[in-house]
Amino acid sequence: GQQLNQSPQSMFIQEGEDVSMNCTSSSIFNTWLWYKQEPGEGPVLLIALYKAGELTSNGRLTAQFGITRKDSFLNISASIPSDVGIYFCAGKNSGGGADGLTFGKGTHLIIQP
Amino acid sequence: KAGVTQTPRYLIKTRGQQVTLSCSPISGHRSVSWYQQTPGQGLQFLFEYFSETQRNKGNFPGRFSGRQFSNSRSEMNVSTLELGDSALYLCASSWDRGLSEKLFFGSGTQLSVL
Image (cartoon, rainbow over the protein chains, first blue to last red):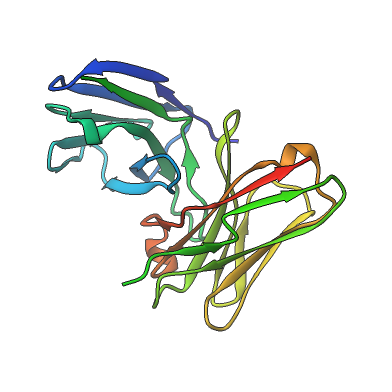
């Protein structure tokens, strides 16, 4: 089945630093998404990408859909304490059916004061 | 606007028992998906329901089943529980199948199988 390799697994950074994480796949996806999950909650959608090469921002977050459609990255600029959480990439193929999302294993972001 | 509501929040069962989890989607959302989240496997797709019909199913055994009611509320059932079924079960709703990647997740039901 499809698998997403997300890296790094965890990041320990100082407040104010920029963050970069990425996701690669062995197969093509038509849609890439980035979710954030905080303790005790379900994932929340941050950014959705629909076209190869697309670059989309949401506040301090910027994500790109790779040209090959097999990868995506997420950048967070000037991190703040509330950015702490687990960030998941997810891919989706729109093959006509309501296929589920394939998720990466997540990047744990920890911010040291 | 109320979010996705999952009940119960926590559940403890023993091997061999069965369990039913409930999910109420955001008002107006007709698609409900279920995911299993474990530390080892991450988030894995179980199935999706739209207008009371199961549209797609992930790679889980037949012990995992679900249904959707006419008001879009959904239930998930796991029979003959195994230790490996211990996980956070997340329900997510979306407006339409075509937009089913824009999922709104509930807080989940944490199932522990002893």
